[in-house]
Image: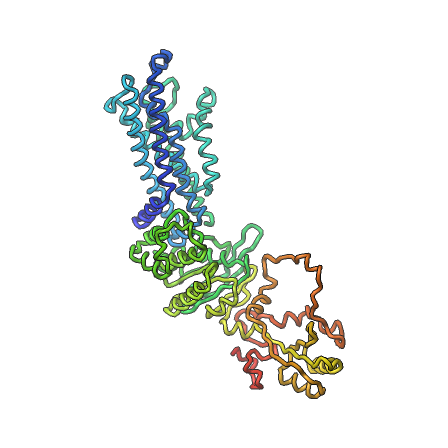
Length: 254
Length: 373
């Protein structure tokens, strides 16, 4: 990684429209849908069964829209990488900088940093707006574990973006990458987690493990790992995807 | 200086580039010619380290491209005019590339001026025409003020003014002592731009020589002789005399004779001896384009099949004259191949033709067949 290449990657990333709209959609979807769900649950809180009231986690509730918001992060991560391939820009770039590892790592560093900033902005906005709407059922940022959960939510979004970048570097195709990642994170992972038997497997998925960081009230679902270990599991997934992408980029003809 | 040694690239069972060895020297425009699919782009991509050679190697100034420090300052390349993100503006595209090697922003505006895109610098490149794309690609290649430049089909999509501009730019870059390597499938364009030619077909080297040498070796001529229409017998007599003197004769649709292997004065003498009145005796030369087509004919990757519509009419073919033994002069035989046969790369030129290669020679001045002119 060198400052020159980092600077170049920053120029690339800020000068295409897809960066702005994918990140904005991640933020708006997360904050908007979370707020709507907070309002819905706040209005019907008293009708909830006793058990659900007892385990109600206002922090998690204020991040409820992230299931959809993370799709914006996935799109961002995939497009940052695949637009280089679909346009052929990768050949122009590599003809200028033959050190492929440098090029890839700089790109991922810049894009992830940007995703982290947007992710943190999203998580804080989503949290405060959600808590404001929840009113009497809300919780303050100063309470134990709450700050960890909010910062964790921002990290989670950045990691999802980075995972998508690594994944897309392996596949090199936007259609293919999005076609696998979107249904996986939106549906498959969640559906599998809804059943006791399949949860034993799906709890190790990157999103399921990583989202543990946002939980502040011990829920009905037991996991064999804590919040930071969960995020650690997600990091392992991310590193594997990035390493795979790096190896493919280094090995294959561009 | 670009140097390829035994460069080979296989894609599965298909060999795109086969044992290619050549040098591209500084101070010259070196044309890289070949039909579509002959391996030009693959070779260029291997030079730039985008594709790994299956075997062999290629170096720029003695080092593989991937090991060049600050490559952009040494090598500039235009591979594909469309290899830009269409959503990015021309100037920011160049800026991102410039920043890769720490090239100052001022240089971006300079090269935009050089290629004449300063007025559209802030437009998104997806609105660019192919010609504008080529100019943008050339600007990117010039960014680092490199000593070695590679251009893959730079004149594609350019208007005549643009083609002239590219031609002058290439020549100017070479005159400054740079190494300029330009691929094209247009022989006529390369004849005007390049000093040196590397011709490949089906991934193999077909010729590696100076343009003048190439012209001398590969453009053969013929004489067209037309006997007065009223003199049917004379035409036959002349034909027989020409064959006897060692010429090869083909009859053209209008009754004229196409003679190879004899000088014009000799043809005239024979006509005089036979007492035949001539209406025409003219020198003809195969164009360079034609010579190139002959050279690469067997190496063309994508040949079209004949349109069956052609059966609807019979074109009058060149026919073997009546007085010729049918089998004696098989036009498609080895003789025909020898008309335009290229010498092996690097071999000293032997001219298989008796026809002079320059119109000036026809005046009867002696030609030295060993002289590549």
